[in-house]
Amino acid sequence: MERVQILIAEDDPLFALELTRIIEENLGYQVAACHDNARAALDWLAKAATRPDLALLDISLKGEPDGIGLAEQMTGIPVIFITSADVPGIYQRARQLKPHGYIVKPVGQLTLQSIVESALLRNAQPDGPSDTTNRPWQEETVLNDFIFLKNPKGELVKVEIKEVGILESDGNYCTIQVRNLSRFVIKNSLKRIAQQLPSPLFVQVHRNFMVNLSMVESIQLSENFVQILGKLIPIGTSFRSTFLERLRTL
Image (cartoon, rainbow, N blue to C red; front, side, top):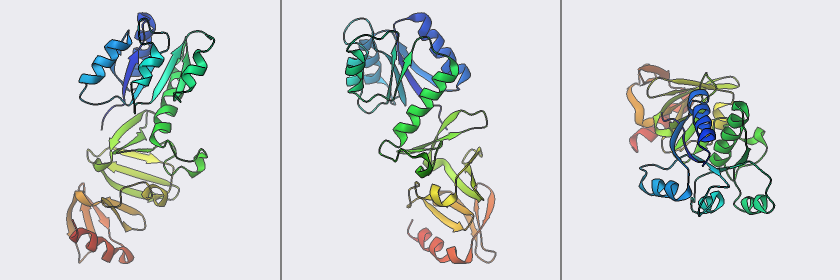
């Protein structure tokens, strides 16, 4: 699992320090970098091994380009703009970039958390329906090769899909167990979650279980069990043939 990585571009050192404190100490995410001008932020992006999951950009950065100009050069990274005043024309210019949110200084923890989480989830399903009842993952959403899952502390944790081993249905809830044995409980059905997982990697073996084929440790055909992450998962009669056929294709 990886912590959500956030880039900050803010030229007010005290506000930048407060943002960093809230993000790392209260929200449980990680500030990948914090710069006071756009040029430094762009230089860092050019050298960074991985792209940040989100960028918080002050619109009124000193020098050229400003925060909006910086956002224009950060293709593919969701952006939240930071502003301290209602400057005529600025909002209209910023809106053309379709940012994932706005922060008005000063900002509290709950407001920041709400805006950041909304941005992450919106970016995870940019073309999906706006009606949350139709979102299979609701607050736990698929993003390329990752999913964002809420841990017991209420923090969004970025988990690689390939690290997901077992999905277990329990009525309207589903428990997800990953390779390091961490467990996440989400309020959604196994059927809806299955619609969002890559079919070559995952297969349903029982009406209550779906597993990652790459993590299969052993199969007890006589007892109809498959072992994954040290746990024996029952193989349902109606799922057995499909499961075995999928294994042969690996």
